[in-house]
Image 1 (cartoon, rainbow, N blue to C red):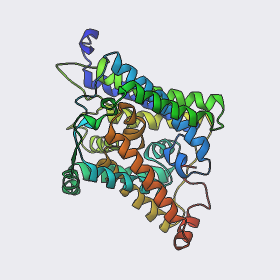
Image 2: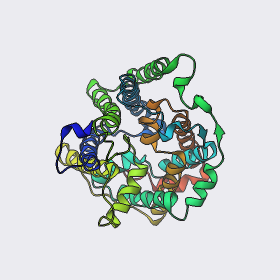
Image 3: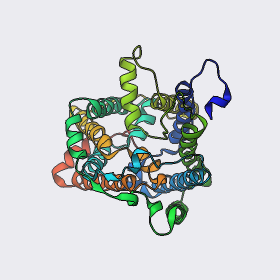
Length: 357
């Protein structure tokens, strides 16, 4: 479709960067106001309210995404989420690592990106370490580990998607959306906060359709992408180091947009505050958590947004397995940190306001 716009100087990949920048700006503003975070929904002190916001966004994301598929605008038949050979071991280990890491850093990557834009230096350092380890896992020293774990697969056939199961796509879409809306309704959030969460969810199909339909160009194709932070963080890191050799992509625009949106929102509505680490022990905990998330995000095929908020609406079994394992990893790490053996470490990180709080 992109060629019908008849741009003379702007290619589809270049347009994708600007499109991602807009998506990122909108997400950054709304996520900063709502404190949108999957970790908070699982183990936060206000987990009921946080879960309601995340569920409301998921409901809109799944309905909008599947409506776009039904309209024929996009298709996930050839997407990486729909590969019949499910890399089950990589997803399980990666999900557990990512979940554990976001508890150690007290924030999922999307929340930490927003906080970095709001002046939180802890979140910024975590984001940098996350991007480095993710890039190492994709193309560096940890790539052999990724390949080895990824070689353990289960042939799912057509069952890699819920759409192939009895009832078809719309039955499973309805079940997921109704369950999510039920959680949102009982969350106790104000109508305004839920409205912002619904708009966050709308960004998911908007990004899918934008990259998969509006910007589709046979001669200069772009990948169909939506909200995600693992690959974009690695991509942005590589582009920042070698921008004269490679061009910015959708992920770079998205990450930049989120940082700018969060910065603008925190300055306009309040919330911008310089923050840093309190102790060396706290620094070590956050660096370890960032490393877990960088490795785990690549192995699992995405973060809480890439595999969760954007992945689940595709009805991919791989994405659903990934977000379930992320949740399990978070719960296990939270339980571990709650034990007496870790009480000192927990205390050292809760005396002052922390990244996702």
